Length: 58
Image (cartoon, rainbow, N blue to C red; front, top):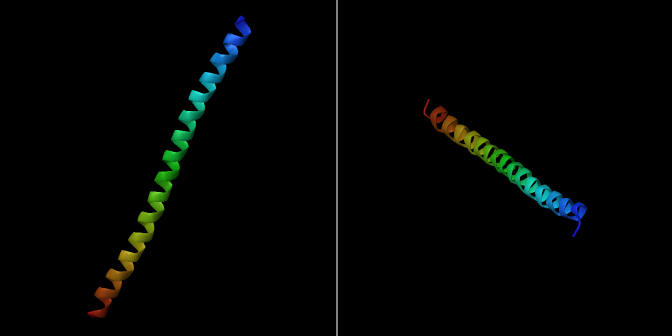
């Protein structure tokens, strides 16, 4: 095995590790955005229910 082949293998391993980290960060951000959207929808629903409950008593 010559020096060029060794550096190619090291380059591939480093590229896979970096890609794994980038994909992990992207999925974490995507999951955070999805959770934020779900929280926003639930908050709007709760707000509308509370507004309906308290406006009905007046």
